[in-house]
Image 1: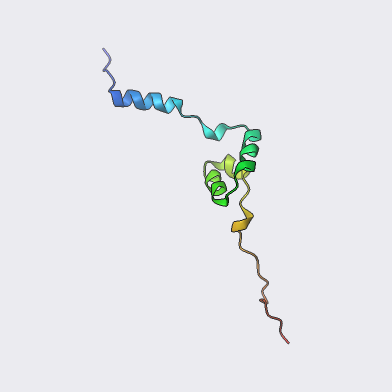
Image 2: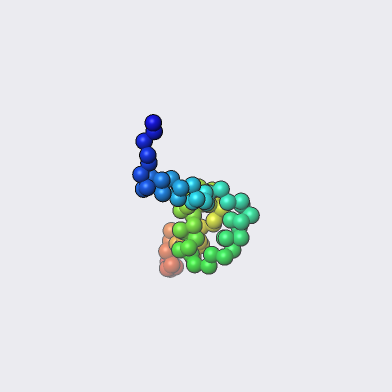
Amino acid sequence: MSEPTSEKEASSSSSSSMVPDWTQLPEELLHIITGKLEHCFNVIHARSVCTSWRSTFPFPHSLLRPRHSREGPFVSL
């Protein structure tokens, strides 16, 4: 005779089966989502979901530091 499962175990197993696998979204849909994300921090959060999302969502250029020349902003005379 099998042991009865507790309510907590039953509810956790049924809720985990209802959670969608966001890593398996079609690439076309990811491109649509990319166009809708306006704030750079939303893009950062989206990139942290999984490796496929990281490769789809480009890093926000507004967070990149500008490269400076080795000579600096001053001109030597």
